[in-house]
Length: 151
Length: 80
Image (cartoon, rainbow over all chains, first blue to last red; front, top):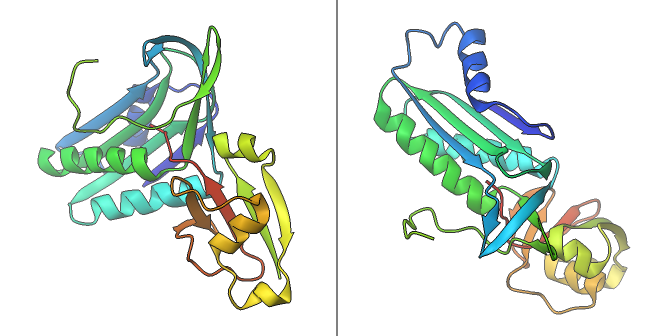
C-alpha cells in the first residue's frame, strides 16, 4: 500500500508506471489495474471556479486513508494499492486524486478501487475552498457516488 | 487535565482559531468528553453537522477525553 499526500502537481500515469517499475514482484502477477483519477473542474454549482485550496488534517489524513485501504482490500485478493491526493493550491485541470489498484482479475480491482474512492470521499479529512470571480466559498459536501444525473 | 483542541476548514474560520490548549478543571475530569470540550472551547451548543476526532481517529461527541488528548472538530469532508 502506498499513500502519498502531495503539495505539487503529479502525473497519475507516470506514478502508476513507477509503481510497476519499482515492484518487480507485481510483473506477471497482475492481470487488472483499475484506476480512478479525480480532476479539478472550472465550474461548480453554476459558477466559474478560478482555483481551489485543499486543506487537510496532517497525520489523520494518512491514518484514515490507511484504514480505508485496509478495510476495502480485506475481502478481495488485491496485490497493490496506490493512493495519491493533492493538498494546497490547485488549478482547474489539475489532478486531485489517484486511486490505482492491481489484482489478478478485474472484479477485485474494480470493486476495491471504487470502494476506496467512495470511502475517501466520505471519511478522509480533506476540505475544499473554491476561489470564484466574486469571492471564496467552502465546498459544503460531495456528490453521491451513485448519482449519474447529468449536471 | 490539559487537552489540545483543533479546528479545521470553515469551522476554523468561524471559531477564529486553528488550535488551542484547554485546561479542564478537576470537576470536569470524571465526565470530560468531546461534547464538554466543544462547549468549553467554543461556548456554543454541539452542532450535529460537526465531525469529531480524538487523537486523529473519528469519535462521537460522547467519547471520553483524557489528559493529553488531541480533540479535533471539523465540518463534513469534501476531498477527492
